[in-house]
Length: 135
Ligand SMILES: [Zn+2]
Ligand SMILES: [Zn+2]
Image (cartoon, rainbow, N blue to C red; front, side, top):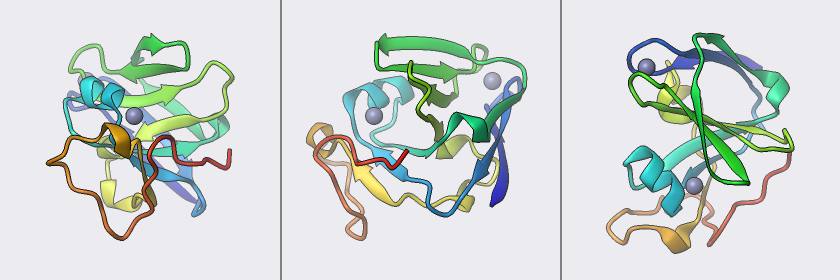
């Protein structure tokens, strides 16, 4: 198990997460992630809520749909993590990790909404919609 830390660009919000080798890490190409981040693909790792905690400040939440709440820094806007109403998992953005090399994406999802100029990683499985999660 690896104990990782992360946070937003301005430093107001920080978190820690416990990463296990089997955690699903996906690059999401869906429209919602694209709009929320301003990037063509958004990489996430999924962990059970018990392995994630905000350690500094508080993120602001925004629910575009009933399925998920997106949490970001209210000061600088960095997308940080996502939660679901059932408390199944927390998705944490890999780009907000202090050491982003610590977790490599293992799959790609929502290829059906991908912008055509955004390449796929040929070495990773790709799913038209949500990749399967084991949580
Ligand atoms: Zn911030
Ligand atoms: Zn998405």
